[in-house]
Length: 139
Image (cartoon, rainbow, N blue to C red; front, side, top):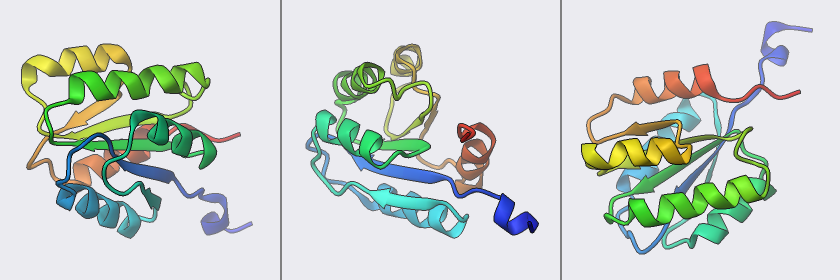
């Protein structure tokens, strides 16, 4: 077996939750992840937390990237986290959040189980490296 066939593909869902209609960042990170060799699924705009939870579970992704710029992160992200916990998917899903998240709100999201928060200006390679290092191993 060659080294290439032994390396697994990291599956990612990039999700836009709530009424946030700004998706440029989601498209940019989706393309960067794809170019890094990840398999990327994009949710599209205006998804409810339940839709994101269902897609995460049904697509059996390694990484859920939530892009949120609407200011509703303290309401919507905890709903997604609670749903992942309810489905037993939280422990084997790396959850990252990107967007405008004020510093004072970050500890609460991390306490909810978010693994990392990436704000505007974060180098793409930093996010890619984080995912490669922290994506759950598959059996």
